[in-house]
Amino acid sequence: MAQSRDLIDIRSGDLFHQPVPYGLVYPTCTADGEAPPSQRGRTWEHLAASGRELQPVSR
Image 1: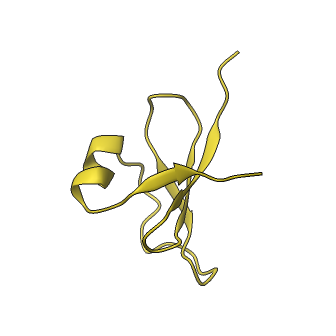
Image 2: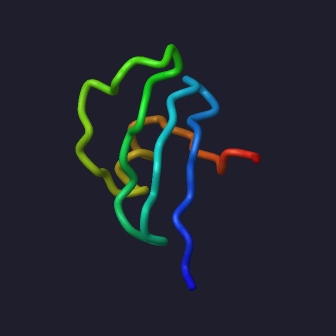
């Protein structure tokens, strides 16, 4: 069974969630705990092109 995953942008500290493997990535909160300015899902490629460097959140 495929699992969702939580991600962190190691540059900014912003948190993201990817509910479906290879699917859209959604912002969940900024590094300071505030709601993200947009909750629209983005492709992994779009986020990488925007300078995001996402890594899985270690548990």
